[in-house]
Length: 65
Image 1 (cartoon, rainbow, N blue to C red):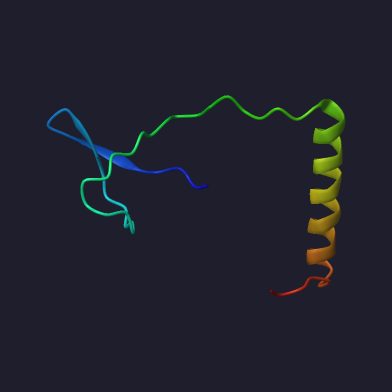
Image 2: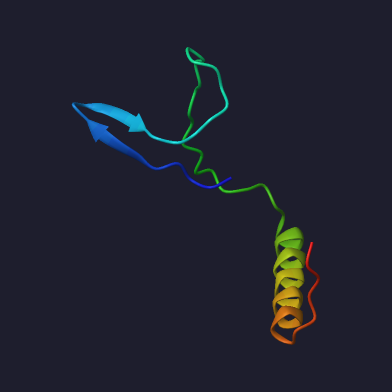
């Protein structure tokens, strides 16, 4: 998920993002900066897969969905 951008207006956080939620819906926003729970091995595998994917894309070997 992308971060949400808000502005402060009269001491209040104002979020201006489109939603399909009905008016009056209460939403709890949580700033989650805890990172992730990957082990060192999982992180190594992830970085290796990303690197392989990037090299493949640079070489023109990608699929469009």
